[in-house]
Length: 430
Image (cartoon, rainbow, N blue to C red):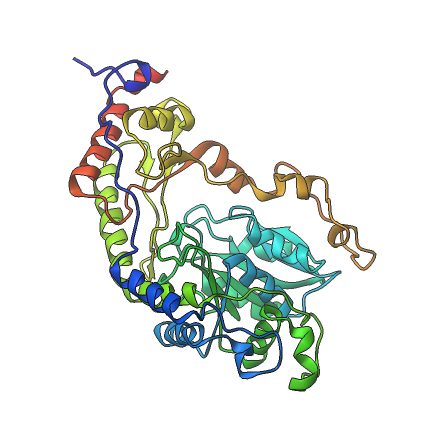
């Protein structure tokens, strides 16, 4: 006899909340206490002085990050968003320029060019890894294109060989947004170290975190210097430091505190273990859920390492007979959320609505950028701009966090049981 689905009034597979995702331990608490006891919570000066580069823990965190990821320069910032803004500035991008961006990412990835008066041009995503599709990138290139801003979405590396080949062909910069992909590798290279600039996130729900924070990496000394200037009031620094090209170097306060850095130093030590745990748990889900008709597990290139910020599954309506949203809602009814996430399910239909559909882009509501007299191009953000993105978001893709560190074998078996139950009783959703 079939089990009535919970969405239709049956008993759910589980009612106990899943565990919270919390990788903060005694090491971080001790490190923060030492900073608090010192009274030195930040040591930045917005002037040309040795403290222009921040306090000892900020500089140690940057040094540790550079050694870990094998890059010459790491510049800490107070968020991945700040890192994106600083990177656009450092490359000299400004009004009249275009930057090719992803439509399927956090909004800051597409907003960064707008901040400096440039125009974001949305290329479509790849059907398999959801990063920018190289063929779509090339179709978007115009004489005004200055850079490609790649997002390694969900922890899965984009096709960097093909993207770098396009960039070299057209003499473009490549910025890698690695907010969701620390330690992801593409052909034995860490993402973030393949293009000209990489940016990482330490937001509270990332693989490791400092509450808020970010890190820019580059092997280019000129780019690094310009990022330092943008981070910390460059307008005060360029003259005493003797900087000749001061374009876009007027600065902000994108600085990281000593408390954030102290936490980051300890978190970085945990990163390999946390990544390994995500991969093991994701593979367990892949092996079990991959047996179910109508579900396609996350794709990963043979020579890439996916680090699973989330676990992204494609849903086939033709096979299962119902729309993805009905299926996901049925799973939600069978499984609770998590501690500290009580009102926010850890499974969701789609990811973010295609960014060009945001009011900012629909109305082109900026004082410059799209409306600048220097901009000689024409861009529209109509529905249909990126068909694969729209198909994934509105019909096929759903994401979950059931592979997070802290999930037990029992927890994950409940997830698998819920998926099996819904698919076995899919006719209830017709």
